[in-house]
Structure formats: structure tokens, C-alpha cells
Image 1 (spheres, rainbow, N blue to C red):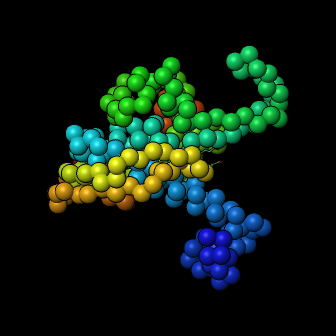
Image 2: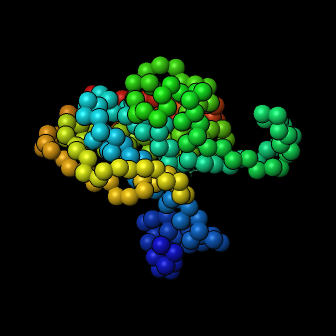
Image 3: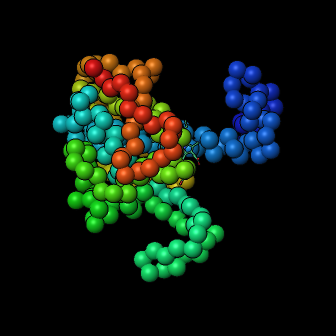
Length: 234
Ligand code: HEM
């Protein structure tokens, strides 16, 4: 990828962001991170979602799409581990954390913690009709460094998954497990068969408006791009 980016930035297309990346020191590295942050996360989440859809035919309706996406990001949070730096001396679970110390947090472990979630290893989108555990659902992290692409990612995932409503997906791969690399990744290819040619009744389009709303317990900056507006399907 480095070679491809170097080539692209050597003669950047002015209609794209390439000139911007090309003009900053470490632009190739910045572009790599941006690609991993935006594309890998969304693509891997979509792969896990379709895998679960194939395993739960009863969820294969446009109506279930929203909770499907939420539950997929609970069980398979692409941003499975992150870091923060303590700004003040603090204490957690009896351990002192001095200011300046890096602290790791893991949405993956949090989302699978039985003290926070009933039957956490089971894929059960209906759990999202109830109250969420405080600070227990962090697929896009939280606070000042919340994912900037949360609304776009949610829109893309709902749009694609709702397009598979009624598709009768079947699993061909035998088992798929998550692997924590930079983003959470399926440990092998996910092979599915589509058994019907039914087309979705969804009215979602890529020009729709993202409807990701951060859970109430997750504060984010006023004006951050996470607003509920119009539903994605009619
Ligand atoms: C399902 C898809 C996605 C997931 C699960 C996801 C998850 C995350 C998480 C957990 C973080 C915080 C990392 C941390 O600081 O600890 C993050 C940051 C970020 N994400 Fe996403 N992301 C997704 C899609 C996207 C997309 C589509 C874009 C861009 C179009 C994007 C752009 C960013 C950026 C720029 C940051 C850094 C924000 C900052 O540090 O201020 N993400 N993402």
C-alpha cells in the first residue's frame, strides 16, 4: 500500500484529497491510518454482520437492520482496543494512575463483559430495545476523540445490510472468529451463498442521512456529527 500511495502522491489528482496528503510530512502514513480507520473498520463490520445475518434468517428483514448493526458492533467492535493518556492523577480499581500514563481500553472486552451484558456471547439484536449499560457500549469510543466517521459508517452499514433483506443468505464457511489486529478482523474468508433473488423493500440510498445517535451515556462534543434525522427506510 505504501508503494501505491507514494505513486498516487507523486502525481496527485486535484479532484481528490491526495494533494492535501501529499503536501504534509508523513502524508503516506497519515493516509494509511485514514484508510484503516475508515475502510477496514466498515468493511470488517459489514463482513461480520452478513455472517450473523446468514446465521439468523429471522433477522433478515429491513426492519431488523438497525439493531443488527448495533449488535454486530457490540460483538465485533472493529476498534477493539484504544488508548487514552490520563490528564490528572487518578485511581482505578485500587490502582494509582499518574498523569501522563497511557491507559488502554477495550470496547471488545467491555462489550463481552457478563457483568454488563446478559449472555454476552450470544448474538441477540433485541437487547438494543432495552436500556444499555452505562459506558458499556463504545463501538465508536467516546469523549473528545469519538470516531469522526460514526454517522457515515452507520449509514453505509445500514444501507448495505438492508439491501440484503430477504436474500436468504446461507453460510458456506464453517466457522468465523474475530482476530484483533489493527482492526478486529475475521480470521479467514467469509463465504456466503445468496439463495433468493428477492430485492429489498428498503428505501435506503447512499444519499440518505445518517441516523446514528450516540447512546445517552456517551458524552460527545456539542456539534459532533451524530444526529438523528430521517429514518433510513420507509
Ligand atoms: C464501523 C465502522 C467504524 C468503527 C467501528 C470505528 C471506530 C472508531 C473508534 C473506536 C475510534 C476511536 C479510537 C480511539 O481514539 O481510541 C475511531 C476514531 C476515528 N474514526 Fe472511526 N470507526 C469506523 C468508521 C470510520 C469511518 C467510516 C471514518 C471516516 C470516514 C472514521 C474516521 C475516524 C477518525 C478520523 C477517527 C479519529 C478521531 C480522533 O482521534 O479525533 N471511522 N473510530
